[in-house]
Length: 522
Image (cartoon, rainbow, N blue to C red; front, side, top):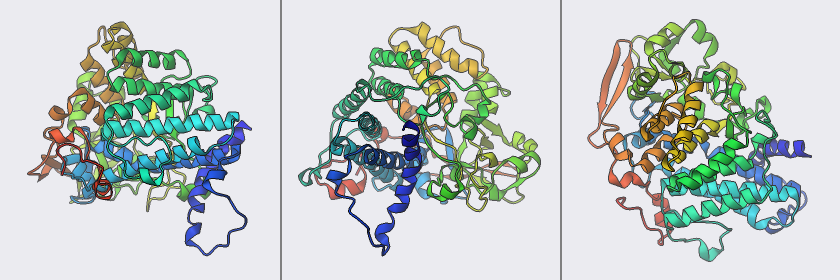
């Protein structure tokens, strides 16, 4: 029974994306599927609803991933040339307004996730083990979405049930309201006794779904972001003490690749499948966009054999990030060379910039940890490289350890903080610290989790954003065959006071007169 339920989660969601097109076709319907109110009455129906919820979260991943990484300080936008993706450039250079399309998409995507969760929590009739587990998972997703809303927008409305027509125009909520909802949902999910735990550290089957330990990690993260350090430390200790997760000990530079899908370090991954028949139903632009700008590069030798071409060259690492690695572990550092490569290293690998070409938004460094490998592809579609089956990483155990280090440090337990930081450093083959500071933890987290969607919200809550991001977007580099040139300058750029919160999307304030815009935005 358990195996069939897991298969439904993986497969039914893809089927839902196909079936949803029926309303555009002249297809006779056979039978009556019933109404929304009568659908969630048996295990199979509730699991189908949960599959749709997982697919919604997966569909929102691209926008979520790019918005958060572009707003941080570790990457240039990149692309083919200036204006290749103007909306992404606006984010990275802090020139965006209330009508920004990617911000709107993430916002609406989070509320779609909440709506799908509310369908399950409100409409499920019955009390089977499977129903209770689906409800607990739905509460996790609802909490996750509200967490993103409060940490990015601050004053977005809480929506914890299916709305009646007279509730459609909700007013802003306070951050306290949002945090209370996050805590409530996660505590209820954890205490329901419905969420599974992995059998052991290598249990890949159970880990494809929300586990009790994942919900505990998310609650710990919520406490940490609110400055509830003792509560956060206690929750992270439960995850660590469970013994169900561990740092991946395979090749570090494969950690964000197929080789490490659902590995012992995986806390939360949105699932992809190596299934050619379903390839286009689960395609993602995530890796197509972040792969190197292959139409402006020559490939030879080892690179030609390993790298999947047909990618677009966004999210190129900054020299500042590279220098931070070198300062910590030297130019020959194991983790550094598993994360970033210099142009000199790329040339030795078999890659060079074509004569007369240039790589826009590139300072002479290439992200290696998420390089596009042929071995990651369902099909090597060099004409449109969107068919990888790398699971979409949301949280891994390294983040839990680093959050635990911070929470324990702030709670006065510096020995535990030191232990957890050194676990990360040992895996990275960096000398352990003999004592630890908050700056050590911040730096370790930047290096370990770069381009994994953590940095921006950390900078905001640490109070570091205005300093770190003050000059972001002032000048933009390009890499040519002759070296780096600074090819573009902005008159307006950088983080400002209003950027402490993202703007409520213009569409929301236009349609809902009860919604007030965040401070500083017009």
